[in-house]
Length: 517
Image 1 (cartoon, rainbow, N blue to C red):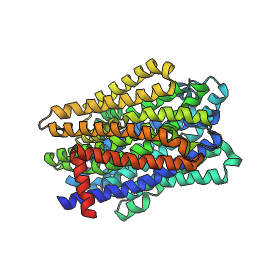
Image 2 (image 1 turned 60 degrees about the horizontal axis):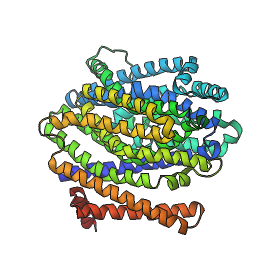
Image 3 (image 1 turned 180 degrees about the vertical axis):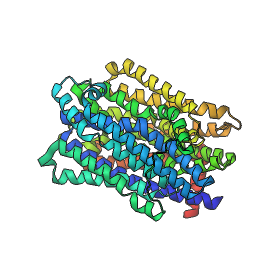
Image 4 (image 1 turned 90 degrees about the horizontal axis):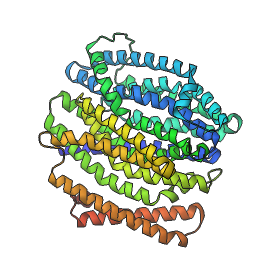
């Protein structure tokens, strides 16, 4: 058991390192975009155009691949062997390629109504540019469909390196464009660079698949037992995985009515940075544990399944809660450091920092919903995520209507954070009521202690930031020193407080550090 736990920890650490590298490159990509286009009309149009195909893919196909394909493929591996599993995968990839290809053609033919659905710009020039860019960028749907299907085949067999490298490869292409061709081709060339990056994400999955013995064989047999299971799961799972992309699309539409459309870019920059900080850890964990949960379910090992979820929740929240509090405290200097400069002025920094600070409030909910939704999907259960996802989307829309006009981007970010918390709670309650529960009294007490320590740490960091900022040099150097001091203070305060409060995870961390020392 200890050996297996250490192996899983090493895998998560390795995947997290690769994911972090890709995310850091993504941040640098966004910094270049901010310096060149800031929160102006071209950036707003580009973000709208890039979001439309992503939302359609995430809402319709990502769920089928991540939540439906992997459990069924794992079941084939467990019960029928590799050859039968590969045959099912070939049929699934064929169906996904056909469906995403059809959606791509429709999106390229009718971009105007899609832009009208996703944004409400007062400037017709921005709207026209968004329409043109949407037509250029819609093929990302088919590229994504094929790439993520191949990723599913790899992850189900515990191969995570190539999938974790996808983001880095794509971002390197886009960064190279900024340094070579942006001056000549502008925002349209940037859209083309994104297409090339997405195409390469699928291509790099090829070599490890070949080493595993996978050969793609087209199949149109949608009536096979495996495809029937996927289609049966897709309906409920799709709605449950709509939450994040649809909430982002809703918030973006409201943002297009703020600051002459600049709210779109502010939310996008803040969301991208938020996902680097939250997503690097959370998605690395869920990508590793989901195939394992699927195999445990297929093997009928309910006890191991429940223990894996419990441990993942507790360790994740031990790390995510201080991330959330710290990010709220240092949002402005962090945004200034990452994006500030060039055309990204003080106004853009202010509205983006406001969005990031309130988004961070929902980080714990984001972590819990990602972990628990994988638990339901691994069991091939979609009803609870379906209901929870629908309620979460409605909560977000209602809060956007109530808060957008009064609190601008802060209100939209808060709406998103509350929606994530509601979704997480609705996923947790049925599991908590089941036999054994997901969190016992000791675990809940531990979580309250973590939250208290994180809150106190955030207050300390906020106070230190206000005191230290005037004493440090101006510019990027001062921001780096300031954030470094705040990070060091935050880690120290949180760790000491959790030790004083006798949080179990802190004691385990101290024991691990002591053994390593």
